[in-house]
Every structure is written in structure tokens, then in C-alpha cells.
Image 1 (spheres, rainbow, N blue to C red):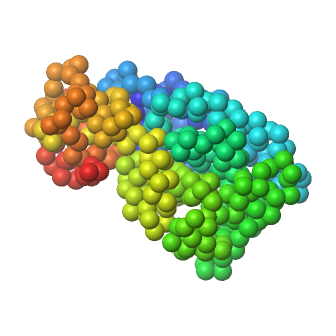
Image 2 (cartoon, rainbow, N blue to C red):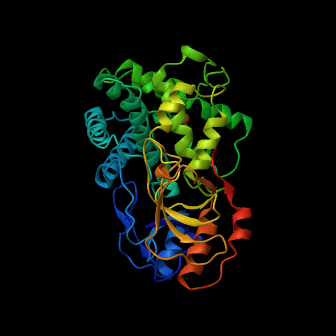
Image 3 (cartoon, rainbow, N blue to C red):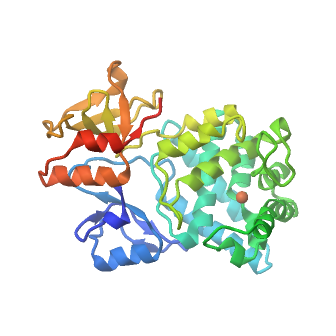
Length: 384
Ligand SMILES: [Fe+2]
């Protein structure tokens, strides 16, 4: 399977992963053949990319760290919690804590896996899916930092509920499509304090988890909010959630831009290390992210082009590549794979965007000549 932009989706393509809404309803089942109606519906829902199954990537399965079922179930529970607060009701914290336990169990049992998948979400469900992702990514980071079970649970609850204060922010500010005015931005920033206020009134919620809601927008150089605290004044749980919050936001499609590819989001995070983010936390986080996820199209220093089919957790810069084209754009014989971890002189130089990858794979399938030299010039340089 591979990820494509919906604008390049065509009738006849096969959807490879089920798409759910935050109520857990299936919007588009895995295995569904796309038609004009479904493609229009994806556009209406604001879904900009999907996973498809095709001949070239047919055998590729992208590993999941947390099962689709648990993810969908937790999104539903988080949505309920938001609705309960909006209706001035109490949140059922037992459900929240059980969800964190379930996610933690799954993350611990797949602790050797890297995060590859970018989940497909609708605009309306953004906050709920985002909360669950931040929880998963934060727990993986906590495991890399050798946290014990109690620490992981505290971190997981805080990460899952980090934006709960948004329930007190007026909808017209929360859902505003354009830029916020300074006054609106000031109002938006209050969600951190609101979140803390909400959570500290639940005796079953550890106080440190409430501090994640309060501190997740603080930055190590003191440039964050609400209190502009810096360095070790910020609790490590909040430093972790700051990193995972930004990373997941970059990986999501927004109205004003499509999602970043992982290596681009990683580049953004690395730029913010020391100023915004704690370097130890960023390093622990990056241990868990596939720099070039399965399905990425890359160019090697030989000029040849291939698709990532597997990763090496210990050396993420050096995945296993199935070779597709030589540097002149000629099709290579099938079945040739390079494990870069075992080939020290070969390395990735370029990563193709989803748009260019789609063009290359489509032309390859249809036997159309591909000008790799030209496309390679437009591609993005790999991370050094
Ligand atoms: Fe936030």
C-alpha cells in the first residue's frame, strides 16, 4: 500500500485502509474500489490523502503500533469526554484511564516497531484523533526514556487530555479557518489553564497529568505560554507532549496545507531543538519514528530510484529499498532489493513528494518514459 493525495485519486483505485469518523463509523471500508462519488465525499470531508493498494506496492504492509480498533475506540471515548464537558457534565475518567492502559499494553508489546502510518482524519475530528496520536507518540517516547509503569500512565493520561481545555474556548475561534487575531489568539492560549482547572478537580487524575495540560505549550527557552517557564521548570511529561503535539500537527492535513512528510516534520522539530524542545526528549522521540516510512519513494546516490519496503530500527537512515528505476529512468529487473544497512557506500540522497511519487509510479505502470534526472532535481534532499 502507499499514500496518495486525494487530488490524484482515480475511479478504480482500491482504498487500502478503513477511514472512520470520531463516532467510530466507517466512512470508507478497506478494499473499497473508488468511484467519483467516494472521491467527492473524501473531498467534502476534507480528507486530503488516503492509502491505496496497487500492483507495485501490493505486497507492502505498513506495520501498526496500536491496532485500528483501539485507536478508533479511544477517539470515540475522547469525543464523548469533550461533549460531556461542553454539556457541563463530568467526564467518565474510568473510561479514559482504561483507554490509556489499553494503548500502553499495545505500545509495550510492539516496542520494537517504528511509527509509519499517518492516520487519515476528517477536519471535524481533528482534535480527537490528534489527542490519541499524541498519547501514543508520548508513550513511545516515555518508554525510550525508561519510564516505569506509573510514570507511563501519568504521562499517557496527560497526553490524551492535553487539549481538554479547548472545550471552554468559543467554537468560532476554535473552528476559524483563517488566522486568529491577536485577541483571539490570546483567548485560544487560555486552553492550557482551562485544561489544568478542569483536570485538577478530578481526584482520580494524577496532578502531574493535569500539569501536562497546563504546560504543553511552554518552550524550553521561555517563549511559550501561559507562564513562560523555561528549562527544567517545565515538567518532562509536558516537554514530551510539546514535541509529540507539534509533530502530529505537522503530519495532519490542514485546510491551508497538506500534511508534511515525516522527514520534513522531523526537520522542523530538529530546528526547534534547544530553543523550543528539550534535546534529550527529541532524541528519545525520534528513536520511534520511521524517517522514511514503508512506501516512501527515494533516490540513492547511484541515481537509482526505489521504494522503501522495510526499515532498520537501529539505523533509520538506512532502510531496505526495492529498486524500481535506474538513473536514466529505465525499469530495473523485478525483485532487486538493497538493504542499505549492509551496503555502506550506498545512501539515500533524495525523497520524492507524494505528488512526484505518484507520477513516477503511474508512468512506470503504464510504461511511459520517466525523466528521473529532472524529477530528482525537484525532489527534497534527504536528511544528513
Ligand atoms: Fe494545546
